[in-house]
Image: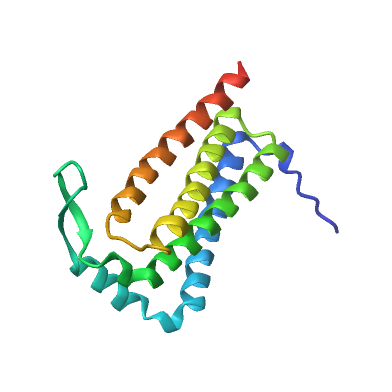
Length: 166
């Protein structure tokens, strides 16, 4: 006996539960793959060293003290892992968006997914631009300013999708 599974016949709640399960499983697979790819990089010690190296440093031209590693350029291998993670999550969000469009998810959920795409792919760009290629310690703070900017752009992208719905 052949069973067919009609995704369109599922209720919205069941579709969202399916997306949640798919997303959670995919994130775990991404974490496992990134760990496997970088197994020789001694990630655990790198993370411990990173957090133990954090000190309060003045943000240039403001004098406001914020946490920063004493030598940000010493953690390039961790930044590469963060880049791999953010680009993978960004691509996962693109796949989720395609599935949401195909399954006729509510516009609010599509807008949320577009927000996530902008954030994760934007952050991956910032990591590769400011952290992986870091030449001066002040780029640490430029990176975080960029993350705040990308977060704002992601919210704007979401609002444009919601406005287009009307």
